[in-house]
Length: 443
Ligand code: TRP
Image (cartoon, rainbow, N blue to C red):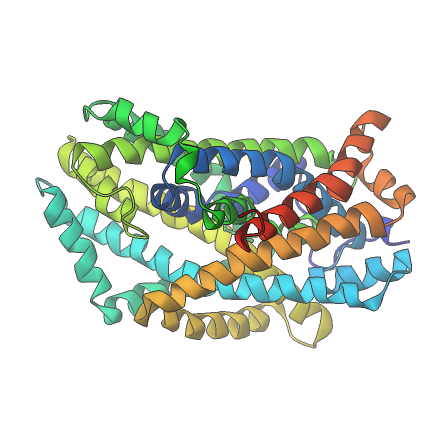
């Protein structure tokens, strides 16, 4: 049966390769760009706690479920859901779950690429010394200039999209695995350097307090939804990205252990980014709630003030772009794998079609901030949690126990029972409660 099949797209060369790829998918703009600014918009500490809770209770069990479903079906998410639905003898409507994910990935990538383009533009700014000796106001000015220039944004958006699609066109092992191996650890080192700078700003404690001292009176229903949505977003869950990566996972590798490792690394990077950024915000009298421009208005201040800052600035934004590429490829991989599996088209052509489509949609974000906000809300806050809810129910209640048990191959019965309980009951109820909370059911 399916469990012994291999993916037609190839396989990861090792357990480590899978960890790198999945971590590469998880760690991206979500951690360094999005997490700080949404934390700033939602009041800090309490938001961070809800996010951490969601990662633990909802994120990790779903990551296990997605990887497991992918490895069992060995196909893109759309076809995987068809195969698994048939295997379990379930209702055909489950097929829509695969489609929901592919569409969400497509929508997310459209704006993701524009933001990654901003990071590319900042590589050049860092290189030409634009940050050195500038005041916080001048640094903010640089960002507004970029916002006011659709031409520049489109240029960098195009560069990023071409880079991403050329990696996707090369397939599972070519290029990607090798790149992530070196880049991820380097990004980590640079973040530590930024945290060290943050300690010298004089507002370090204030930054830490903002991040870690909860004030629940600042939490709104929408804040809770955003925190949950972000747990999905940052772990790349709810749309089949991790499922498609799971479909390239060789047999005999523990899915549960790797999932915990990946979620842990992802969370660490986000928290480090927050610890680096908020002291700079407070030391310079900036607004924590500045929105999507937050990292572009804060980190350059650090680079402008430290010796050799231009070099660190270049390195940082280059690494951020690579982190973004290794995430972007997982956003589009389900769609590309679907085209390859279903039509007489090779990877390269499939990548071009998908890339052009996403690129065009990205123009919406270039020209309109509200377009970006709507797509972001629709995908991160609604589509991903809904997709995740479906995946949890499917893995926990629709798939046959003997199949999930065989695929997960956990060391003991207790671990399996715990996972099954989480995906069948805890995760769905938690997602449902958050949706109700937003609708104002709890007053
Ligand atoms: N997790 C990535 C980030 O934090 C973004 C991402 C990649 C993603 N693949 C995904 C988000 C799939 C949702 C679903 O930057």
